[in-house]
Image (cartoon, rainbow, N blue to C red):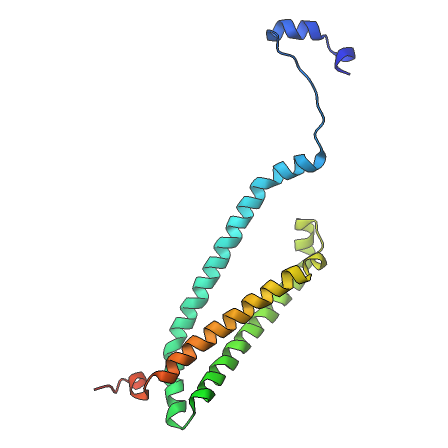
Length: 167
């Protein structure tokens, strides 16, 4: 095509010996090269959003510890055992996580057409064991950590400390 439609000798003289050649590039490679920057940007945004939401959750949990401490002190005053306190905190944390996961699933289901059109990929393909099991493991670890540590703190702390009655 180049030899038929271009005067190669004239172009070489004009360009000082530089030869113009054409080559084929696979479409997959072209698409992958153009998407790399977008993947990096979107990954950075996703990590930032996850970090902000994690920090928000930690701050909300810490601010709620004051009220939880007083309520656990009241439960201890009325005879609640340490196992009961730990169980109440675990159930409360589990319910909060359960409601959050259900809310997330509903939001994803509501925005499914928009997400699928943007990603040009089916959301059903994401629901596989390689994605679901790590997510469930993370949620279980978070429930255990966020319920065990406050429960342990409230279990060993004396009731007087929560009402400001220390000597």
